[in-house]
Amino acid sequence: MQTRKISQIIEPQYAMEGAGVLLQRSIAPRATNEFDPFLLFDHFAFNNPKEGPILGFPTHPHRGIETVTYILDGSVNHRDSLGNSGLIGPGDVQWMTSGRGILHEEMPRRGPSGNIYGFQLWVNLPSHLKMSKPRYQEVKASTIPVYEKDGLKIRVVAGVVDNVSGPVTEIAASPLYLDVQLDPNHEWIQPVKRGHTTLAYVFEGEGVFSDETVSAVRMLKFEDGDQIHIKTENNPVRFMLIAGAPFKEPIAPYGPFVMNTMQEIQQTLQDLRNGTFIQND
Image 1 (spheres, rainbow, N blue to C red):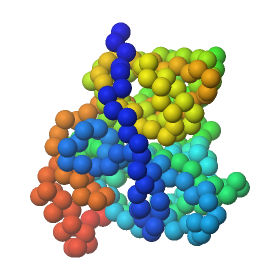
Image 2: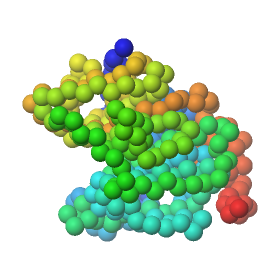
Image 3: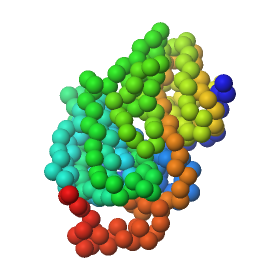
Image 4: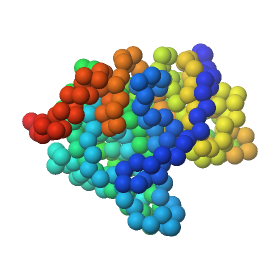
């Protein structure tokens, strides 16, 4: 078994999105598509009362991607053009497949602690699914299995850990999406399919990833291989482990849309102007 080594360490950069939401962004959609099938990873937090009212993300469109929202603290109210609405609370996950098009809004709310904390991941869709019917997989915290073993705690959202399967299924990229906590002086090895793009977002503590010490907050990209090896020394570590099959197709990103060609982007903009972007069949 070949252990994957770190190929890139990314320091998140601040970005402003929505109606003035300050985020830490590790990756963003680019035509170079170097994180295929992953397009974007944002870490959002509203933990300073001086920030004032939370403005969130008013109604906006998506086409050609999947958005994954994972809330650790606080909540997000959402509603969309298909008539769906709901609340994503602590520990909940929303895996939204925008497909051919959706209009939705996401409005954060502080929890009892006064905080909002979570992540959003964008996953690409292959060309044959970009115009598929939109759908949601809304996963409540209580239905996400927790794998625990000798200093290790993992919330398994998608993929498999030691025969424990996550509730998110039927995703084209066959993803692994895990929230991992490792106590001090422990180690963990997780198989990852060879050829799958693999990332780790270290957001608490410090760990040794393939013999390289990394402290929060950093995004790691790994070389190819069969497994990930993480150990801790004096500090615990918590990170998101993300892996998926690349589609190896060209992409044309444009704001909230990711298609395969600029002609498809132009068609998307025309659909918005013509009022044909949303199809309710």
